[in-house]
Image (tube, rainbow, N blue to C red):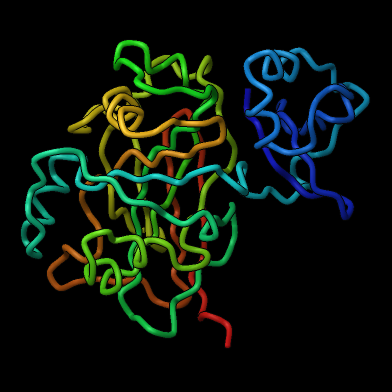
Length: 288
């Protein structure tokens, strides 16, 4: 099931994509909530109701809808750094040491952006960079999850672009400021539920800038796989339905190129993950 948040006819709602149409879930089943976060918090039974909802009389043409970030207000947005082997190697070239353990940072949820949303080139920096990542959406409240049981807490997957303002990122060890500028969290185009992804560690991912391939790898190249990430995080704190986890980016980021190639106004980033979807965003000047 592909779950979307969308706008149509002056109204924003949630739905599931069936072919070239969106089934409006709150209309198809009055027991279902009107937002994605509420749907996830309602648990597996609500997702099952969404799967079963008959939308034959409550459909919107996909082409006529504007897709929003599927989860516009995640409970948390957590991201792991340095989690692909080739990316670790290229980061060393710009003075970033190889971490001995998983390295996590927050992206403030106010950075969330959606499919087609404009990404601002900040007035205070010219070092805007891209990072395609597989996003994991948590579906069950959990703590101290064992790696072998971690898949049971996953609601689904989405495409993330961990847009980064590199000079601000490298100013502090937490990296949070440089990872959290407004508009720098594109996600989407939908959430693909876990039952439709046979193996989340066997997905090809790519990122293009203006049609030029910059990043390409498979999710199986992660140093710490998705289940190890969930186990590690849940050792420290409770994960909740609607938490979003960005699982790391492969090599090819602009900051590691020789010479460095940062994003410019007018650039179009296209992120692709096999079986999940395509996320495209254009860079524009930050409004005055």
